[in-house]
Length: 383
Image 1 (tube, helix red, strand yellow):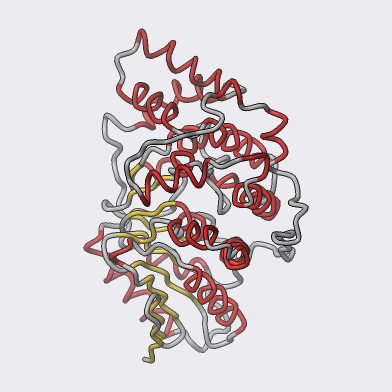
Image 2 (cartoon, rainbow, N blue to C red; image 1 turned 60 degrees about the horizontal axis):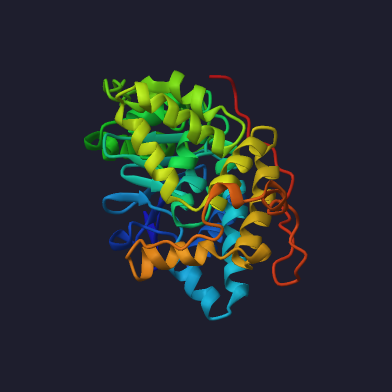
């Protein structure tokens, strides 16, 4: 057994299985510029290395990965270092695309918070294992951004309009709800994660002479530890009919109106909480989010990532006089007073024509265009 160590990521090789551990526990394993670059280089190396047959990814501490390092992104921008920001986004989306189309099995052990960039890294992978400690959220609209990193792809493919609910409200769901909605593939109790990981390494190492790993081999081991979680009575997924009625509307204004109308006759806290969250969020971010998820429903993952790179570029370059990301970032991560100064300040002043332009290519040499290779999802033998 050999290991390789950097400050922010641990790499460990156990025979033919490579373990990758995100190692910023005091920062909830938020992904830095350096971590993204190192992960991209490492995954590219592993895919080409015939000695590597599978990869396990996990986080150290109480979180898997709570997102990208927003504070450093804003600091880069305030210091005029647009190159680092562009490379951060380009590498992150390239990494997300690589993992989603990886030619070898990648097993994500998501035992704790998974948000933003952490979700982008893991939610399109083949094996997404959650526990009773897992919490998922995409809260970007609350600080003037929008759910990116492929979220317009994986949120748009959830049951009904549950993806719109998660993206517009930023609300959290647990591991059981991730299983029920399809965001996760397997539920394992946290006390069994280490044993399952060890057995995966042991069994795959015993078969090291084989040129490849079949999904059925990994699935058989995982299923030895899988448990069937039960949704709590108060679970948001038991309100899916109401969510579809409200969040299936064409515009953010209509969604809010539908929620407020139903809240009058329904004493259900999730509605009042959803209304409150949306009214606190950036109006422009809400409209960008809704349009992005709706567009994502018709697109491939690759198309979603390219479009999201365009949107993020316009936001960071402050195209169309958009400053909400900086305002929101300041209010949450710097002053921490949560006194938002959104502009425009209400939904009615956010014009659809402007929202549509965020998806267009950024005609600025400082940002450019995201080029992603055409890759097919790795197919293995039938289970």
